[in-house]
Amino acid sequence: MLLPTLVTCLAGCAFLLSPVSEGCGPGRGFGKRRSPRKLAPLAYKQFSPNVAEKTLGASGRYEGKITRNSERFKELTPNYNPDIIFKDEENTGADRMMTQRCKDKLNSLAISVMNLWPGVRLRVTEGWDEDGHHSEESLHYEGRAVDITTSDRDRNKYAMLARLAVEAGFDWVYYESKAHIHCSVKSDHSVAAKSGGCFPGEALVTLASGAQKSIIDLRPGERVLASASSDGSGELLYSQVLVFLDRAPATWTLFYTLHTEAGARLSLTAAHLIFVSQGNCSEGALPARGALRTAYASGARPGQCVLVSRGEVGPGRLSRITRISTRASRGAFAPLTQQGTLVVDGVVASCYAVVDQHALAHWAFSPLRLIHSWTGSTGSHGDGIHWYSQLLHWLGRVLLDSGRLHPLGVAQDDRPKPVEPYRTTMDHLPRRETFVFLLRHDGSSLGGTKREEGPVN
Image 1 (cartoon, rainbow, N blue to C red):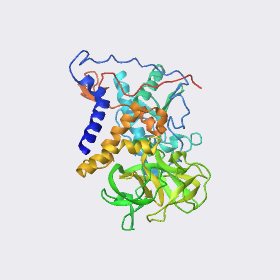
Image 2 (cartoon, rainbow, N blue to C red):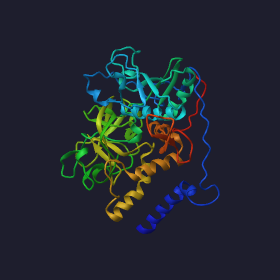
Image 3 (tube, rainbow, N blue to C red):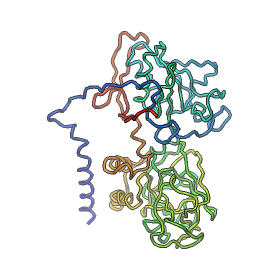
Image 4 (tube, rainbow, N blue to C red):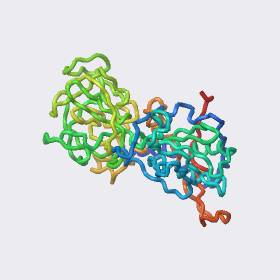
């Protein structure tokens, strides 16, 4: 029975993935490259995407000013790219300080600038601000924003410079002034979509022995307390940990913390699924069958109830959410159990994220559980997102309506697709013998994805 089922699952995956490989074999059109698409400069006062800067679809909300004495200062890294000129009016090196995401996008943009205008370099007039020169809640205070020009200060180039910044992957670009372009990025740890749904490393689970253990120390094969039903309302039992769908011990991540009346506190990422009550609930009551539904952590609200446990098998009890807070923490972990649920910090939660239904996600992971039951393993996996999670995420984006996915999952489409470096000599560039062009696999120039833009607000 196992073999036919596994063959059917693999055949279905092969069928779904077949369009990906159609362009790899011989036939009509094989080897042809698309002609590079024409890039449209941004208009003065236009911004891309066409939403406010600090919204989810752009760079996200302001998370607090970073100073040299604050704990978050270690989130900033200096940029010493010789292809970028930093104005550094303060003579403190502050303009070179930025988040890693901002640094990556800026370095990519620097290559595009030299590519389009030989002999011209990217120039940063304003980066991280530690002196309070910007408006309240400016992303410059977090090292997430830069104001840029070209080294020759040719204002006729700025409209195209803004377009290049969009293509380089900045999360929000604004042709703000005739004197500069404003660019900003999401915070490194709020790009939760890259890890889908996770718990912090210090979160506790209950082992079959009754002892508690931090998720960072949890290993596949151990049995932890979980719920027997797909809506979280069933009896609590011990379920085997099969694999980690994501392990990111060094990544800064933004967590939502649900505080309950019973004193439990569960922290998880925005796109992670949690079981909450459909309507009114009584503190300490047993959940009725069908009384719970799945919701994203970012969609949970005070007044709803979650299922809490005293760390033992048997029925869980309802407890009302009293408040919801957010915090940043280093480390993000997503264990998968046989049941698809687990009890974390005394609260019953799903193992899944991004897609809006726990039952659908649990069904989608059936082949992985089947592989584990057949072979005793799901393949070698270290830190990072598990290969099967990556596959399902791709399939979900292809097959499911975007409304079925958490916005942070869909937001990954905003990131530039992989590009490959193509090196060649450029005799008219005296500073270096090699020059890097950014080409897609299909041959189109530069980076990024097409963005739909409506009229400027």
